[in-house]
Length: 173
Image (cartoon, rainbow, N blue to C red; front, side, top):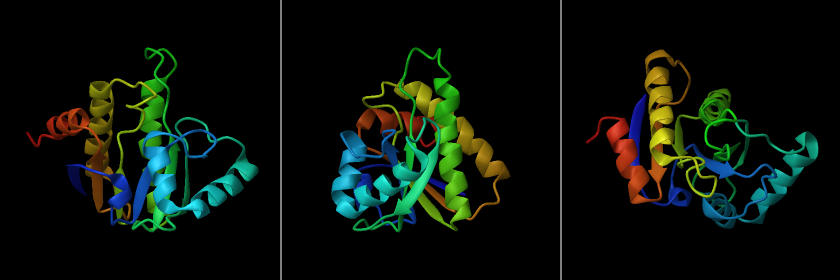
């Protein structure tokens, strides 16, 4: 499995799937979630509404998949990251579950490349360094044991701090 780390705009990714750091209602909003919904067009919101009508809210750590519509990626995998409460409400495990469930959906759908944002490190307040450590440990273990269809993982960091932390965590600096 190839791991790449870039700084940029995830909505511009030409990949099998981009991951959306969604809210529980899958309704768009601010940050990366709003940017993905704007770039994908109104069809994405309609697809998300259908999912919510079937399952109710999407809980933290879980993931669902939709088409990419007007994006350059074929799919969008929506995952709800945990809101940071000082680490006392299972936030670390929930964050790892976000990545685990995204990878599960990618494998189930034969997706070969997935681009991830930095889940929960914006308005949800997850400490960036702690998130980078969790993500690094998860993907290093996955790379050693994974037999899924996913061949390329790209972390698309919006800000310089996350970019630097991820490059350090994965040994690129």
